[in-house]
Length: 522
Image (cartoon, rainbow, N blue to C red; front, side, top):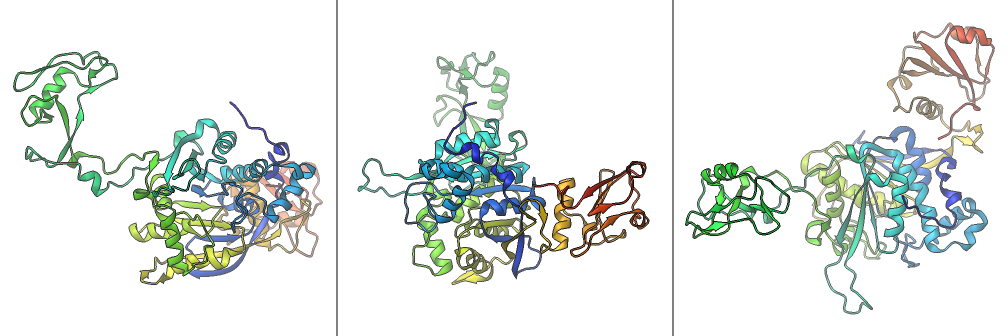
């Protein structure tokens, strides 16, 4: 499989493993309790790492709208990736090579580790939709092939973002963006049908007053070889038809005669036209297979998005020149999620993804949940503020209801990737250790349990204990063993030290792990 090389690749290809694990520092709650919705302010690479313990393998649909890397330096979300934050990151990760990187190399260095973490967060049936322009479409597909696997490439969607022609264009008047679609596991990817439209249903008519209602027609001939599809067809008026050269009738003669007897063959008004098979609206699928061309009339356009942002926020400053319309994200969610889906957007911008999720939940009573990550300072004043107004209502628009929790990126769990940070709350450390041992979501036993206070939980025949105190040295000894009430095949026990000899540890099925040395790193 072809791969893409760029300056700095060797420095970032495994960088996601070195990103420190930071805790999510809860700032406030808004609206409905226990909504499951999150808005996180902070670098999206570190935020994605912080989400792993709770959400690895659980995200159903990811939509991201990363910088298109057009070279335009004037945008608030810096589209050429020369933002000071990014330059600082490049200096630390790429090192001396960072000074010589072209903007395309910088963009790839920025995107690659984020895609690696996004891939880990996707569920086995999940998918990712990535908006992108012409500047990086080719490079993005190549690195997505590396991260997600070329066999998990689903399709490329062309979205009509503009429908007016710019006569001032130097060469062509650009009207589209792309959306790359990849699945975590294409064989398990769930693709939904899109809702039928009134325009589509209007193509069904009933010129012969068939009691089964409106119908349309499909051709009887097809190019696929059919050994029983070379017979003569005779119309009611005696006209003889053979399949055109290079084609075949798609049914056998017996099946065709059965269809004709059931008035499912249309011969035209005069009864001597090329036969066509009638397809009734009452028997049609209750949905439409998605196409790779999304017109503005179906999925919105940039002008719609600007109007939406200004309407919600009463913002005419032009902070976002190219926001995405809610109809675009709603179409993504219609195709790639169900009413209980968990949706992630790690380039949240103005918060369109949350807006779309809330709209859909209000429309169909669903319980979709969103996680937004925004690194810029407007995460609170624009991203979260838009979501607040959508929930509560704005102007003449009724609120959708629901709520969210707002977070900042907090302290790192491990100082210099070695020492346990004692400022991190104990319950967060315990949740992290449990996840790193089991790769399972936080169990109820981390909240309430009947065993001793250091019990984490039991998984696959192993009971886990984390003997930790912020300001004391803890010891795994026989006294501690007497407090264990959970009967299990094996035990993994973390502590600062252990006074039980190796023979007894083996006899009791205990594995001792030293804090912090043996705490695994994400």
